[in-house]
Image 1 (tube, rainbow, N blue to C red):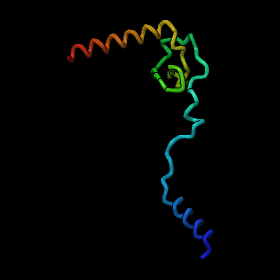
Image 2: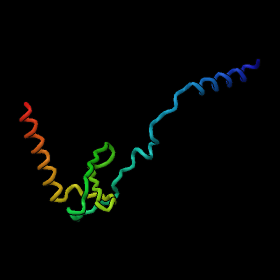
Image 3: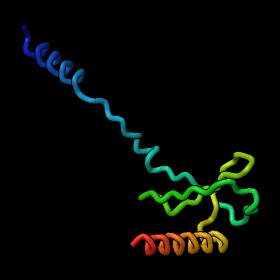
Image 4: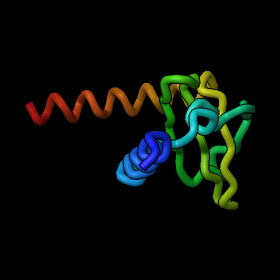
Length: 99
């Protein structure tokens, strides 16, 4: 058998037994979810808040509204800063009670 054909067969066999990567393409990993943010969102229209902290993007806050729409909120908004401060204080108090 020709040496070139043997080399091609070996490469094809090797390619068949290698694992397929489950990782996302780099273009999807590096993309930030929030491109624009809102400063004013009525508090009564928010159903839930999600916080994303990824290495390639700044801190992101996503609000799911009662209309099932998702919007990004500026993390420097006053009410959000107070909300986060209260949540941290509450978790610190709970941790002290456990210890």
